[in-house]
Structures are given as C-alpha cells and as structure tokens.
Length: 572
Image 1 (tube, rainbow, N blue to C red):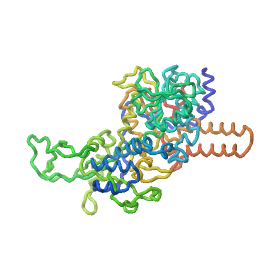
Image 2 (cartoon, rainbow, N blue to C red):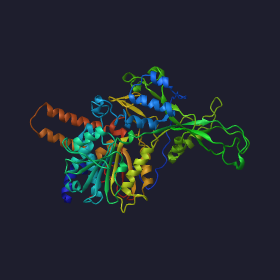
Image 3 (cartoon, rainbow, N blue to C red):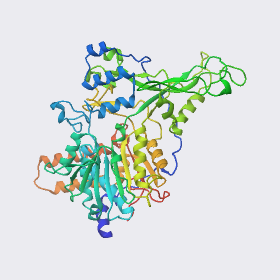
Image 4 (tube, rainbow, N blue to C red):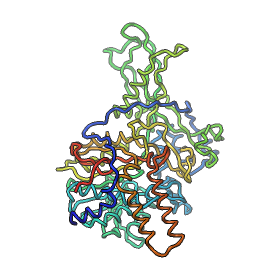
C-alpha cells in the first residue's frame, strides 16, 4: 500500500483528531509512589463460623457451587478471596463462565441486554473499529512488518471486539497479509463456540491439538487458535504480538488485606544468640503451618515498653450463619438485596498471618508505603488518650495481574528467559479502576441482570469483578522487560476521541442518511448510533468515558514516540 493510500485511509479517523494532553509514561523503571488515599475500615465478621456436617445437610444453599464451596471450607477452613473468585468464575461445576449446569444454562449468555452486563464492543461497532485502527498505527510506526504479526486477545467474550478489529484491518491489505495467526485465550467452552461461529462461521470446522483448538477466520482465511491459558501461546522472538485486554483484568482474582494492631509481646528473655523466637502458626488452605519469626524485643532501647505494631491480616471467605437474612447481614441498599437471596458467604478477618499476608503486601513499594504511612501518620494521641496508628487500612492485590502484565511485556520486549533481538508489538489494556496511582480498595462487586448485588450471593450465577490496579500493570511490565515502556492510563473518552471516533460516527450517519429508502428505521439507526457513541465517551462522574481507562505497553524508545491516543501522532 502506498504512503498516499495509507494517508487517505487514516485521514478521516485519525489525522483530524483533537490534540491530547501528554500522558504519564513509565520507561524501564517502577512508577513513582502514588498519593496515599484515605482507607476506610470495612465491617467484617471477626469470627469465622465453621460448619458441621449436619449444617451442610440441613442448610439449603442458593446454588450447587455454594454447597461445594461450603463443603471445601468445612474441610480446610476459610479460604482466600482469590480462591473464592476463581471458583465462582471458572469452576468446573457451576462456574459463571465455565461450569454451566443443565440444559437451561448451556446457552446462557452473560453479555448484552439479555445477560448481566453490556461491554463497549456490544454498545457500538465504532469501539472495535477504533481499537483495530490503533493496532494499524502501531504496525505503521514499527516499520510495517510484512509477516510474523500475531493478534492475541485475552478474555474475548463473544468475539465481537475481535470481529470489528479484523474487519477494520482488512481495509489495510498489507497489514492484513502480515498476520500469521489470531490467538484467543478463552477458558469457557460455550464462549469458544460463540467466537468460532462469529469469526469463522457456524459451518466452519474446529480441530483440536496439544496447543488448543483451531479454525480459519472468514477474513482472509487467517488461522485462529483458541488456548485456555496464555502460556500455551509460544514465545517467538521473531513475532510481532499485538495484544488486546478489554475488561479482562477486572475479572482476575484478588486478595484483600487489612492492617491490624498487634499488641507487644510479653516480656521474655531473648533466645540464645538473639536470633529467632518460637514458631508461629499461619493459616493455609491445607491447614495451619509453622513459620519462624524474628524475635521481637519487649522493651525499647530506653527501657520503655513499646507500643503495638501493625501487621497485615488477610480477609477470608467463610459461610454466613444459617437462617441469615439481608437485614441480619446488613446488606447495603446499593447491592439491591431484593434481587437475590441472602448471601451464602461473608468476609472474615484472619486471626493470624497467612502465607499471602506475609508476602503479597511486600510485592511492591506502593504497598509497603501504605503500611509505613499508616504507622507514622497518627502518632498524636486522641482526646481519650489513645493512639490511632492507622489500623484498618485496606488493600486489594491481584497476583495474576502481575503475571499477565509481565507476560505481555516479555512477548513485546523480551526478557533474560526469552531474549528478543529487537522489541516489537504492543498491548492495549482497557478496563475500569483508579487512574491516579492509588491502590484499589473495597472494590469487589457482584453483577446480575445489569444491577449491583452482593458478590457473595448465588455463587456461579453472579458475575464478580474488582477495580484494576493500572499502576501494578505498569510496574510489572517495566520490571519484567527492559524492552518496553508504558503509557497511560488515560480516560477512555480521551482515547476514543483522539482516535477520531466522533468523525467516524459522523461518517456513518452521513452514509446512512444518504441511503434509501427513507423511513423510521433509518432515523432510529442514526439516533441509536449517536446515543451509543455518547455513552462510550461520556465523561460525567459515572460515565464510561471517565470510569474506563486505557493503558498501552509498547517497545522501549526512550519516550521519543508516544502511541496514538496517548498524546502521539501517526508515524508513517
């Protein structure tokens, strides 16, 4: 394709966009420590009730998965929130995405007006078209490779986004010919079939191999490969991976922790050598385990008794008491208690350290800073003479977020384990969460039929999600590979406007108005098109254009080139 042809194809959508403000970027370094938000104490049950076998037999659980979870907790004790989320979303029996039970659930569709939520690609085709154009601009900026391009999408839903992207890329024949394969990382058998039907056709054959499932796309006969994990996609230093993660990170399991005050240990002589004291027990899913802890002096250097210390404790999931009601559990009105039965489970505070609480809050200097700030921010005595030392601060940490972000960065920029001669490729992350660097807190939510509900009600039938920690993604990416830099996050409204989305909508409106015949259907199409676009870019307090953020991982270039939509221009 000639330079003139490319320019003409892009002009209507990209070159006419408004100038955007420069956006944050991280290059080969961890992001700066964020402003520490005020964290509020969560109302928790302080005692995890352990059910007896008789309770399990007599109690009526809301779903088969709820009973299975209760049986597991009875055997092992309260489980981490991440384990609960993983079972609810991807459990083999009754999981929200992967464990449909009975014929009534085999064709259950979580997406769209008839499902539980609507995603941006379902709202307007323009969203997917602009995402496709974003990868076209990266392909142009990276020298227009003639082969070796991989399109990878994690959590592709019904395949709507990839369908719009591939259709758009067909307008750029040179890039379309450079695509070696499309990889879709999907754990749900039902969704794999839906994606195959949309992208390949209902009559298209699907074969199975050690890697996954295979078919051919209706656009240019491009091979499509479905894998259950991203690790099944081979690392190839000669490939150019373009990775899409739309509303994917919000569904990854999280661990939740709360800072608590630990009273000073009673006076006791130090062990010989002043080293370690007696072991302490920590809770694990397989029972208590012993860990040695450093000896804690009971007196300070000046002979005075030290005050309490702060330690992280994990929030665990345990069953609610039998015969609980929404009133007894104090289900907030924001969770629409009239839409679900009382929750089967609740959060409880672990009375002792767990293996996660001992290690995950030390994963990042951002989390360590919260503890340091909490310990030093309130040394002044309160009116009653007590001292508030920051107990109650909460954090949510998703280890899977670090794993996926590191994988994206490694595929693009290489790593010591997977060296790459020159960085190439790009990843675009679109999701919701704080964009100011703060750590998510109190963000776990349940969604049923387009309403917020308790995340602990009807496990397996309720969608679960949590705010995305974009700074954690950036931190993991630049730490995993020296060959990448991160731009953003920016608000979704800025990205879509910057990609020329409004001009694309106006073009579609003009084309429809010029078509025949006249009638109410044409007017309805134009009205719905404009309404859906405004919904995507609405920057009101709760608008999608503000709540949803975009983040880009691109090859390291010392900040000389910013991606389109993140303050950069098209590079020809």
